[in-house]
Image (cartoon, rainbow, N blue to C red; front, side, top):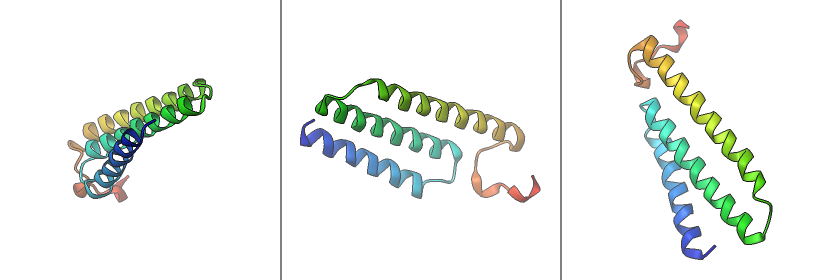
Length: 97
């Protein structure tokens, strides 16, 4: 992998972490930031495996975990919107569970 692609992917990873930390008022924004982090890490791992000549089969395990994380997050979002009416975190009272 060239230095340009590594720098671009690290910049993308840092921007997604920044977005996750400072823009967490809505659950959907947090989920999108997590997915962007996962895709960037997948790209970095894939480039490293290609560069080192390692087996690409292990990327499939990571991709399955990313898909499971996305499906779980969306199901929690749907359940939360169904029960509370919106995904704005600051209006929730989690003590009432």
